[in-house]
Image (cartoon, rainbow, N blue to C red; front, side, top):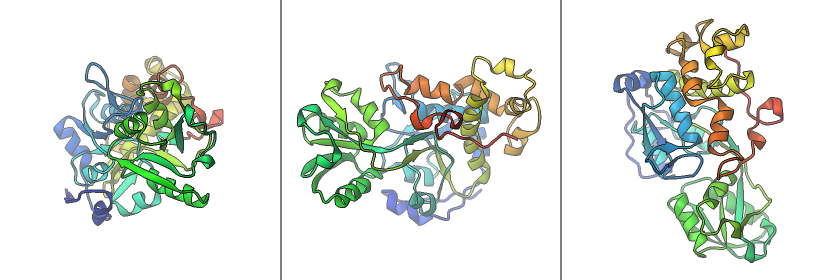
Length: 338
């Protein structure tokens, strides 16, 4: 097994190991008995500690699904909170086994950091949030505004592109964490808070008066968010990728955490392959036959994960929108387990 040791302080220097080789992650995780997963420093609905000290959220549940598939137990996860600047270095250096932290898939990140994105767990886009009393109804009215955002993300370049395209000026206030950006905006340090719209919805729940703010209608970017692994370990790449796909396929097939046991006797060949009662899907991944069964039974299908963490009945209150299945007019589409 070869491990690439990265000595870096930020995203740019992680590119030094763009072609690094790292094999044997599955064996290391199984030997250790826990999955080390990088998450955010706190984002409601995606990865945040609850009042009991348990990590909750959609991104956290993706980690749990991988732990269930690999170790048979979704609870065997060690969560590592990481800032935007820390996340890629932590992954490339081997400090964590995977990253599941509201991270946008881009060409640069996919080709120059020695990392692989394994799929899209949430389709998003960048937006703007302002105080209602600012009297602004469109992002095109933000000329001269002071803008708060989190440093080390795609957000900064998107803002620069948007304001330049529309011939507007702005003053930037860049901070280290999403919670710091929310605090700066809430306290009046800036006129605008910009980030992915899902994050705006999440951060709004933590504001002193959530009813005093509004998200403007413009969506200025594509932000496909999903889990990330190191390049050079195809087996681990496949495991993380297909665990996410298993959750999406389970929703499409109507298999839930509550119906998983009944699914074992279902006559549908696709369901049989998914839950491991037919075929050798687990063997192809280097896992047990019940890898997907364990993930779905213990964590739920994609719909269950979404609705539990960020759905319309949660404080974050997000509709499925683009994250609906392709059969329902959305973008979520997983290759078949066959």
